[in-house]
Length: 437
Image (cartoon, rainbow, N blue to C red; front, side, top):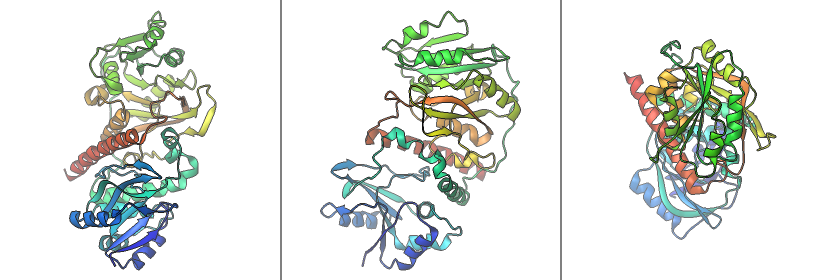
């Protein structure tokens, strides 16, 4: 017998995984994680086995159909540490390695056992993606991509997330990528700046929302001078006219980008390197608003009190009229001083709004991309520096049809996830090398 199949939910216990290992008596063990029926295209299972043999895969998975719709997945890599990495419902393990991994399991989980299993197996051999449509299943989570973004910070999932963090932290320690909680100190008095803080608003085609963002930024009350830098990337929908309606206020700095490629990261770099940029650069997205008039003051106070190179706040999910939407307040309490920068490799974002110490960001710069640029910078900062936290609600994240991540197709979701996995891979490789040194 070449295959033995077990139907197991993604969130399952170590006891259940041990039971599977004890019953696995075939060359390969197929774990199916969906509750819907599994059926194969003609010779699909045979093809999966053939590639498993040819590739010496530790675990193998494939593209498939969601009902009648093609549902491709992405390649696994060193940085594919998200516990919600989408393999599809079929995970085919080489039984000898599955058993070896289970023998090494030294923690008991109620939810994270399959995650623990695949992390352990990934260190023993390749997790191989077959980019061929080999089977049919039905995905039961039909929410838009924008609705799924906040699952890992939903308070209802807190117990699950604590376990996932434990499993990921143990994996990072095994492969040499875990960092102890020791950080470089920063001299926040370094350099001369025209103002203490700059609110940075990168934008493109946000005529409907940019006015609200600018008004929110200009209405701040502080005991120090600040300004607002709006970097517009060649908007053609009336955004520029809205920005210009605020230029009578000398605190507003308007950057009109040239026609070359900039994206969000390039707009941030233009603001950071502008001679009017302040000592601290504070984020405000072009479709969001600060929660009150004290946000900028709270940011600067947090930098001073915590001595950090970067500070992450707390935000509230709302609709366009600022009515709270589930899951409500996102405070990212999974970011602990002891383990935050390690857990950051598992989650898909570091929270918002973000503030940066300008001298450091002028050295690092943002990647010139329109997705994941803030995550890449946050990971890079956290490699060496402490990231501070503010648990007061700092801004309202308005969900509406114009959000860039509200209703993405599967190709766009895959492209975004693949890029963030690469960011994690590069960062993890750097941390492993740093630990070796």
